[in-house]
Structures are given as C-alpha cells and as structure tokens.
Amino acid sequence: MDKPLIRLTSYNMDSLLEKELESLDECLPYLSDNAVSWISLYGLHDENLIGKLGELFGIHSLLLEDMLNTGQRPKITETDKYLIVILKILDFDEKTHQLSSNQISMILDDSFLITLQEKEGHYFESIRDRIRKGNGRARRKKADYLTYVLLDAIVDNYLINIEILGNIIEKTEARIFIPGQKNLISEIYKHKTEINFLRKNIRPVKEIVHRLMDNESGFIEEDNLKYFHDLNDLIVQASETIEIYQMMLSDQMNIYNANLDLKANEIMKVLTVFSAFFIPLTFVAGVYGTNFENIPELKLKYGYLYFWLLMLVITIVLTIYFKKRKWF
Image (cartoon, rainbow, N blue to C red; front, side, top):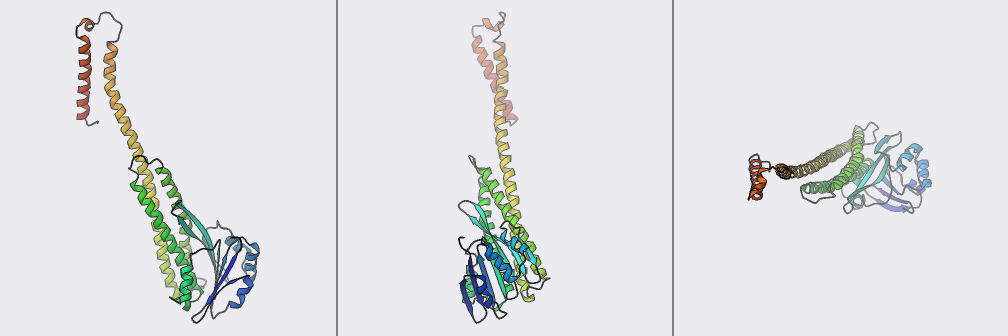
C-alpha cells in the first residue's frame, strides 16, 4: 500500500462510530470501558506508524518486530497488558492454482482490539456489516468476543480454501489413467506444495486456539470460552482434512509412478515376445546362410519353399505356446 490506512470502529449496545483516522493519537479518546474499539491498521511498511503504536500502547519492540515480519510463524503471546495473536489469512487463486497469504496480528485488551494487516482486504466486511446492523452478539459482547468472530472468519476461510484445492486434487486423480497427461506429475507436485503451505500456516493455529481455551491470562471471559471450543472443532476439522489430502496426493504420485512402470513393463513384454519369435527364425536363417557346399537342402527343387514353411511352423508353434501361457 502506498499509504497506511487507520480505521476505527467503536460500538456498544446503543451507539456505533466508524471513521478513518489520520494518526493513532486520534483513537485514544475513543478507548473506554463503556465501548469496544476496533482499530484496524493496514500497511506494515510505515516504521513511524508502527513505532507510534508501540509507544502509545506500551508494546515491546521485539513483539513489534514479530508483527512486521510477514514470514513469522503463527503464534500467540501473552503479556501483562495484552494478548497478541499473529496468524495468516489465506487466499487461493483458482486461475493460477496458487495460494497467497496476508499476515494479520491482533492485540487484545479488555476494551479494545487492534488488528494489523499487510494490505486492505474484504475478509471482515461481513463482520463490520453485522456490527452496523446490530445482528448477533457482537454489540452486546466485549473485545474478546470480537477476537473470536475474526478468528472464526479466518478459520472459515481456511476451510473454504481447503475445499477448493481439495476439489482440484480429486479431479486430478481421475486423470491419472487417461493417456497423454504429460504435465500431470508437475500438477500433482504443485498441489502437494500448496497443501504443505496450508499445513504450515494452519497447524500452529491449533496451538493458538488451545492457549485461548486455557485462558490462563484471563483475557477471555468464561462465558465466551464455549465459542473458542467450537472454533477448536473447526480448526481440528481443517487440520484433519489437510492430512487426508496430503495422503491422497502421496497416493496419486505412487499410482502415477506405478502406472508408468506398468506401461514400461507392457512395452518390454511386447518387445520380449517379438524377440522370442525372431531368435529361432534368426537361427534357422543363420544355418542356411552358411557358406558350406555340402548342405543337403541346397540341391532340393523346393528347398526355398520348405525353408519358409519351416519358418511359418516355428512362428505358429510359438504363438500357440505363448497364448496357452497367457503371455500375450
């Protein structure tokens, strides 16, 4: 993004405020125990903005570095003041069949939630719309419930991407036995890479959700823990589905290689049968191609015909023998 974007959504049961801010200082008057403030920062390239965030909210520089490192493994960190969650939002491009990630960091306090994202996206627009309309529990709950709702949207997005990629993997399996699929093995390997990418970014989220359910820091209200248990079921489902597709891709590669070996064996079988025919024929032709003068059959009137009849008999006998043995 050329310029960072700061969005504030402050709400309670009776009121709602949404606005874009020029600086982080402008959000301070809206932080209160009587309302939930959701501060969204888009764009991580502005060091001054991130430095200001650490200064205003007392966030350690090492934690800020983790938030800025877009290659950071998903993790959860608890401090005396905040609960910090870092994870990835994933997108699957159906045209290129490639996954991309957008890192999001969440800083949870009792009365506010700060989210930092690499770029602006549509991921949470449905949640904002629910807050505007007052649908659901969000307007009645605190910032910990908002954290759950965002995590739930992210995990739902995981399941959608897994399903899309899974459908492609299942269709690929049907093509294994179709002749002429030259690029199939590279496609299978590409899908395997994408599934590994999913696994790498989703599996740590199980640890995050378990830490949230343990709630040792007390940032999650007891009444809201049941929602995180439901979230845990979803992330377990996502992890298990990934494992299934990983096994399916491994099986596809094994079947593909076995199919290639089978085709090679069929070719070798045909070549071997042909060589078996020609070995005795070559032997007979070699005998009669020798340069000795006293070969009895050389003086026969129909010796050449007898020679070809012998060749034909050998061929017929071999054919009958191979068929009885079911070699072809």
